[in-house]
Image (cartoon, rainbow, N blue to C red; front, side, top):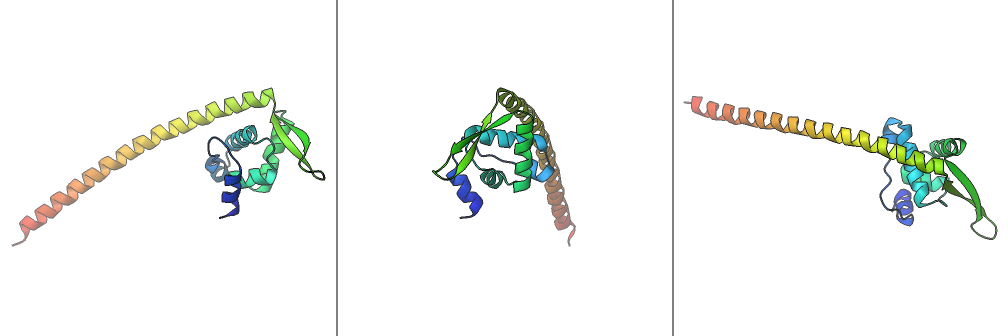
Length: 148
């Protein structure tokens, strides 16, 4: 079992956190939304675990978290993980919750538009295949009839 798989199985959340858009296309909104969703579910998660779960580099994760902190969307609370080690909990502020909702709406709207475009493309490709298959079938039948 890989490290990412292990971390994913250790962290419980309602829906999988996918950042394929953010990591593949540099989409800052998708990265912020994924981090906000993850922090909502697991406020005591480490930056390293966020990085591993979302498939982001540790540097990118640090950048996104600090941008959220700088904008006042997330607060950091200290807590003691053990008698020696102090850790952080990331808490969404009211502005952070509002931003998460706005990002979710925009992300969903974009994905729905992409989905509709994909459906149109799939329909076009299917028609092309049907036309191509019909032409190949007609040509094969024609060639059979032409042979002496």
